Length: 470
Image 1: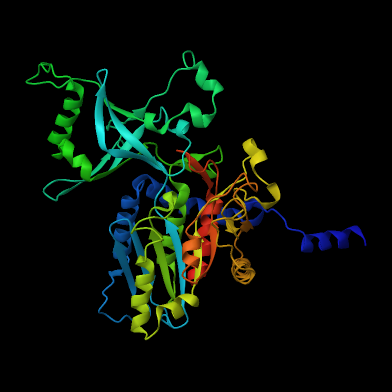
Image 2: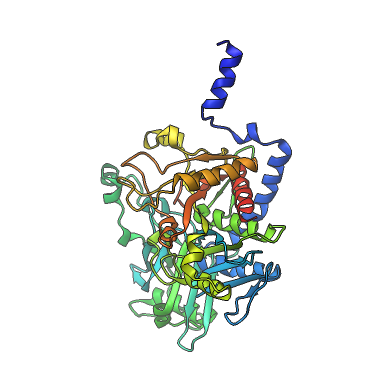
């Protein structure tokens, strides 16, 4: 076999890792860059689950989506939405076949790892006032020390009024901070394991250091005068009293804005790519679909994925199932028959191969930035535990449609066997007897206060979701 024939033979048989620049023209890369400009604005505006849902609801209404009415019958092409407690929502376009041949679903999660305030957070020690916290999701605790943090969330007052806070995002706002120990007097910390050197109970954020001033004079002689000063400020600005913390959901998140990364501006560094990058790309894919779909399409956003999908706003709740059931009833269909014919992309991110930590990846089955959207057959850990493990037939179907639409794509796992692993909402979708596979974007520094994604990969995900829905 001559070298020319051998080259063609190898090209046909061997899996190639294709870099986006080899696959996409300069004009398409420019389109990807432009698409990501609005994505960065979204990241800056939507750092918490409530903010995400508020944003997408307002955007959907501006695009003609109407709130679902369980007593109304909908026709092909109509656009509807249904929100759940301000933290999850579904958006739907009724297809030509309605639900009779099943639906097409994309589901992603709106929550990200962060640091929550405890129900009784405010205290004072040595003339410094601090917030007690309880971290949320899988974080490396040391990464959250010495960062400028912003306070987001909602407080419900005793009179039933809601007070929404977002402090630390504007340039004139104060920020908050969890302190660290300098290396000169913390040498013993350097010899400990990471899990032993940093304690969750010590992730307390400083929020003030001045005593309460009365009539311009610092006359307070009480034990907790700094704490009282913070309470006075909160009461004056927001009508909050200390007891109101008991009915609050307050979160500390990085105060930094989304920024381009690299001299070539090819990447985006930001808090919350996991999983807001899939939320944004799937949502825009639904809005930008330019025809009435054959099957009814549904894009769902759920909460609490980072802590196991527990609670009534998570994928474990029956909110999505009930919504599909209401649609099925109008078509004289049973929901179990609709779901068994449905197809779903569990839109979630995948850890990208990191050359700084190459030993933790198996390179042949890893995803890489700039190589496109990632198909992940299974997640889980310790023998695929906790994974839905997509079927060969459904993987073939998704792979074929991605290739047919000339979209940059790859496959990936979540690290080395027995070293890696993780979970998504896919297994809970699969429990509804729906064909499902994880599809998402490769991320560097996943779960860190600043994660990194490629603009080419973000746009590839958008194209994948749009073509799937159409």
